[in-house]
Image (tube, rainbow, N blue to C red; front, side, top):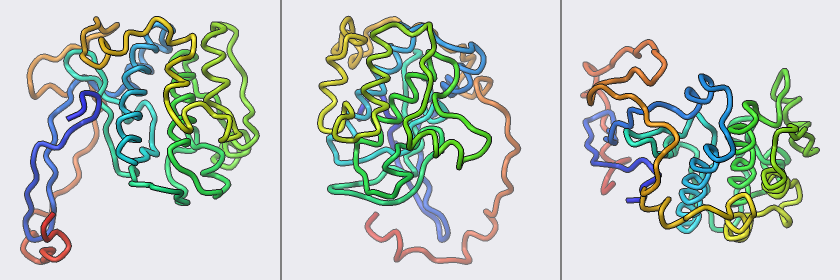
Length: 252
């Protein structure tokens, strides 16, 4: 069980559905907290970025490409540490894959251009996320997906004046349209060695020994106040005996 990824507790099935049971992570989405705060300091962003980097490193070690990194998919637990969630687009990739999937603002150029891609796309999204945490907005924006894609493919973005030189270096090396020059493509070590991370104690991050910049307020194990409210979908429980899926889930 990796500390910065949501884990599967157990599963069960009926005649219609497969149920995946995961622990409740009640601290809310990083997206919601960013929206409330506006932006983070570089040190605050670094705390979260280091955990996300280690999570991506872990997935890539398993030949898994995440493909949907964005603040909505980063949860905070009761201690204020990160839990990466929503692995719906995650895929086992040994060579290249060609599926266009993800969120426009975070897509790498090679995904948009259908050139085939691997783990490099996660490091592009990582650069976008770090930029957004500190700037308060994503580097690539537009009125529609097509305009966003045009900017992404050109690598066209503006760097806020408030970014430190070390931060600028990280953004420049991760938001690199040339995949062969993008940091992280072959190994995450070159990202970890950047000056922006020079004071990061990686073992302490991995062992959750540092004090988080923010600890969510959670009243009890059923407290969902850190999440936006949504209307609950209607249930089809009464029809669970109408469809047999034993073949699909055999030996799951």
